[in-house]
Image 1 (cartoon, one colour):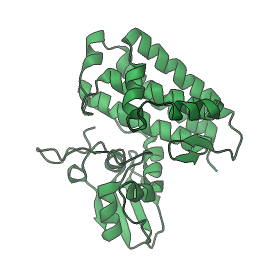
Image 2: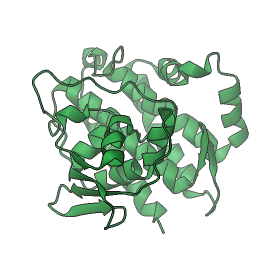
Image 3: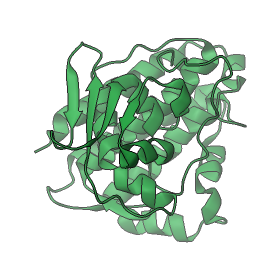
Length: 267
């Protein structure tokens, strides 16, 4: 059983690491472009603030969450419009993000065990919601770090992202309109501390092996598979690396291969 308290502590730590990176920026640095086309550093933080807000609604006021979905001017632009709606000068945006993520953590901590929260196209437990928020915070923090020329060292918190990436194998195929895999996949990842994180049955013929950081960059679509040291064995595992996505919703456009070759570990 997942320890929700420990998971929320990891989410707080991940958020605070990114907070420390942007809190010292001069106002003009918030306008720097990030690898996401059309998104600045401010857009990345605004997106996190917006998503924390709607996640809190899902946990504390499901009716308000559903209303936010049904009243959307263009459901296909929820993410873009959400980020745009939360954009503000840094001295407004940063406190907004801080208070919103704190409110979300408080709400998730009080969700009764076994209760499923509404989300976009699915329902999830409080632990799954917290894991998804940690994944997004890390992924968008990766974009921010790259925009600022800062290398963010991988931490043990990546295990949450890696596990989510593994659990969403079927979703990646479904999101791309492909048949659901019928064979299991074994995943073995080199963790930041030198240990191995393993998911899936030991005897599976299809396997994915490589650095945990590279796998997390892949499932959050922050790097193209060609730039990562991931080795797929078997047709299902190989096909998965083309469609993997740990986030809900339609398939992302992903990132194009880097002309200079592999730079997967330089997030």
